[in-house]
Image (cartoon, rainbow, N blue to C red):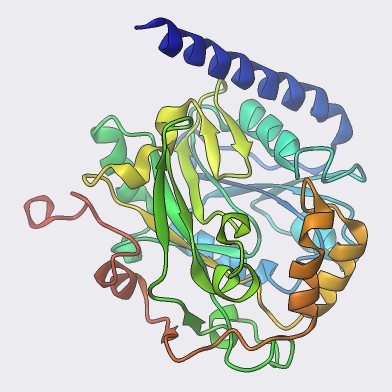
Length: 337
């Protein structure tokens, strides 16, 4: 190992330790409301939420069907009954906190603590409440996928965050229990993939937010690469939401053609998005430099129509695989069946 590589390895190790120290300190900001058993071998779901009552029933049902056995949530001062809903679920352990979402690295200090304390030795799926995981042949659920990965010495799966949207002005739709009925469209093309050596990942940008809100400066468009599924070890830590995780080898999913990748169906643009954007613009808790994103929030509040002639109606993971947005790698190839 040359001097530069050694220095970079030491930098990353130090960074990971600092993240773990932050997580340990953040534990004092959490108050546990409900505690559920965590059986050996259980697949665990983690998340930090605020005012997601409209999404939670479908979110929980979707991931239960995929095979998530227990959920561990932090509720950040919801006012819409989200915490009460989660506390009533027999498979949800719940913590609450009134502290700053932004100061906790957008909730990741809290989530890293729960992962450190409860996730080690489990497959852990870390999601936002507006994300629904899918992957090739997902009808069989997570159990066979994770067994296949572990048998090959792989302890992660990467996923593309795929923005779903309606046809017509944002905020004008009628809410339904199933968000896929309200948000049936996505961009099938127009995604950039750029290898980034520093964290050994592929940076992905594109979709309707880049097309509509950041056309003049694509470098500000949201990142769409994530590593939400990891066989966790207490020494691991998320660095930037689930976009980046340490150690960096866990970020390599999009650069390995042998591995499957999934999609996170992003239901951000449900009808309440306009009112939520007004609130979040005022709270300024969702961006490191919120002043740079005032025009983004204003763009959403204006209620644009994200649909265009190139939009496609979402049909399922096989469609995403055919479009090259997700891949199966060697997962469930003919030789495996």
